[in-house]
Every structure is written in structure tokens, then in C-alpha cells.
Amino acid sequence: MSFRDKLRLYVLTERKLAPEVEAVKAALDGGATAIQLRLKNVPTREVLEVAEKLRKLTQEYGALFFVNDHLDIALAVQADGIQLGPDDLPVSVAKKLAPSLIIGASVYSLEEALKAEAEGADYLGAGAVFPTDTKSEASVLGLEGLREIVASVKIPVVAIGGINHENVLEVLKTGVHGIAVVSAIMGAPDIKEATEKMKTLLNK
Amino acid sequence: MSFRDKLRLYVLTERKLAPEVEAVKAALDGGATAIQLRLKNVPTREVLEVAEKLRKLTQEYGALFFVNDHLDIALAVQADGIQLGPDDLPVSVAKKLAPSLIIGASVYSLEEALKAEAEGADYLGAGAVFPTDTKSEASVLGLEGLREIVASVKIPVVAIGGINHENVLEVLKTGVHGIAVVSAIMGAPDIKEATEKMKTLLNK
Ligand code: NI
Image 1 (cartoon, rainbow over the protein chains, first blue to last red):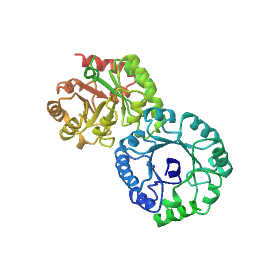
Image 2: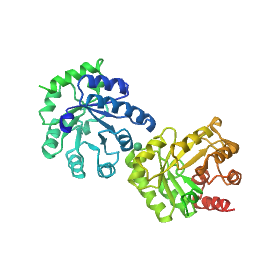
Image 3: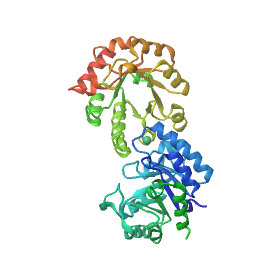
Image 4: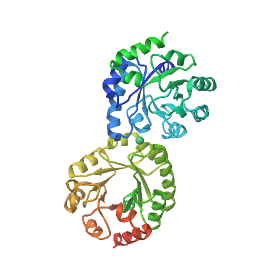
């Protein structure tokens, strides 16, 4: 599987919903092809320790492993890449510091998408596709906004934000390379089963 | 001046007391030989922006520049080094990732000091020498504890924690290579003057 193919079912950790290591293990068992560790306001040492465990797990399953924001930790654990948002290191800086890492940029508009591609991002996390608890209405791209981004950039696009088993097929029709999921998997009573169900939908 | 000599008057930023850029400029005007940017719970992008400005300033003055915790930012702005505490990346990991950076380890006991030296730290920030608002009595090294560390390691030791104009001469008698100051400089009504006064005491 190529890097692009592995963006297909991209699962993000969410400590408020499930402890990272167990949850990621279950998601990998269910068929997740990429994992992102997202831990905010936690000491660096603790992020490193969790990242080491997730790197080991993802390697066993042949899945991609991304670290949110912390380029130093991504390098320390030999992650496949990092995910950078507007509050993180700029893509151009990260690219210079760590040319070997796959760099994902979180973008919330067509303008940001084009800028991230120009700066050298390897893929985009574009959202929010649907309203979520953490994103206000104002920052919702919608399916139309997502389709526009997919049509405008050459790098792969992973859709994020409010994607669940009910709406995933609609999202796929926009031409995205993959979908990123938080709540619909991390918040499920059975994470492995929720991932398997999503995987089945993605293979349709 | 060697790296060791430049550890002599080491000033740390403290946003609660003074805005970083103006305060560092004043401290450099007053004779600070090393600056550490310490910004917790602030987005990476913002830390990077402040770090870029402080790197430029310290370069103009020929002072050392350290970034607390964020190895990625230290590399991005070409800081002289990083300062790592028990919650940050381990010294050994940082050393492997960034062999060109000077690595300072924050230590709070003789045991931690010996461990940090063994892991490859280039200097120690040892404290707290005196009680401070942020450190409880329990973690106070005292002058005796500091003296013991200085006598037990080969790398330079910078004393930190509650050092001010009144007690600095006592601290110097322990044989430390330098003193690190937060409140006595960053909390002074005139930062430049407070630094100059400290510098005069250090030159006695
Ligand atoms: Ni960091």
C-alpha cells in the first residue's frame, strides 16, 4: 500500500473518549490504516512515552503514524509524519527541519489549502466537513467546500470533522483520499467494531 | 567568552512579570550573558515567533539563547541550546536528535545531577537554591545541596531559584559557574538597572 492509500482510514486519539494505547490497538485491529496522536496540554515527556507505544503498535500493523504538532517527538520516535495546524510550526519550517517526515497540514478553507500545498505539505486534513462539538458553525467547510479543495490541489486530502458511519459515503463522493475520524470511533462502545464497520463502508 | 563564561548571568523570561521581547532587550542592555525563553501552555506558533525575536536580539548582543523544552523550536531558530526538565524530552533523546545544541538539564537533587551528567547534559540548572513562590520547601536544595552538586560533577552548574541581589554573593561561594534569575530581574521596576546591579555583584 502506498502512503496515499494508507490515508484511507485515519483515526485520531482523543483522551477524553478513550485511553490512547488501548484505543489505538482496537482501531488497528479493526483496520485503521493511519493513526494520529493528538495530545494537547500534556507534558512533553508524557507525549513521548505514549508516542513510543503507538509507534510500536502502528509498525506491527503496517499503519502510518503521525504526531500532532510536536516535530521533536515525531523525530524521536521515528513517526511517519506530523500534522500541523495554524497554531503549530509552519509547514515550511517543519519541512526544512525534517525533510524525511510526511507533513500533513490542517486546513479550514480553500485559501489555506492552496497555501499549505504551496508551502510543501504532503497531504491535507481538511475540515470541518460537518459541525462538531469542538468546531463552530462558522468553520464548517461542508461537502461543497471539501469538493472544491479536492478539485484544487494535487496532494491527497483527508476529510475531517463530524464524519460518522451515516455520512461517510457522501463524504467519499467528494473525491477525498481518506477520512479522519475521532468520535465515531474513539467514542464508540466497541472501538474495534466501529472501525471494522467504517472500513467496510470505505471498501464499498 | 567561552560557553561556560556566558552562563554567568542567565536570565529567564516570565510572561507574568514582563513581556518577553522588551524585557530581554533590557536585560541584555544590563549585561545578561544568557537568555532562556520559558513559555508554558502557549501555542507552538507563538513560542516560535517570540523565539525568533529573542534569537535575533541575543545574537546582536553576543549572548547565549536557550529555549525551554521545545527542541523543534530551538532548531528552527538556531538557538544555542535547550533546557530540559524532568517533564521534557530526556537528555539522551535530545542529544541524539540535535547533537549541535547545548543541552542544559534542570536538576533538583544530587542524584538527578549525576544522572543528567551521565546522560550527556552540557550544563546543569540546579535548584531551587532558596524557596520560591513556584517551588515548595521540599524541593529546596539549599546552599549545601548546591555545593555538593558543584563538587560532584564536571559540567558547569548554574544555580536557580530565589536568587536575588542580597543572596547572590553567598551563592557564588558554592563554586557555581553562573546564576539564573527570574523575579529579581524580570520583576524589577527597571530591568536594565536590576541586571546591571547583579552584573556588578557577579564581577566582585
Ligand atoms: Ni514541542
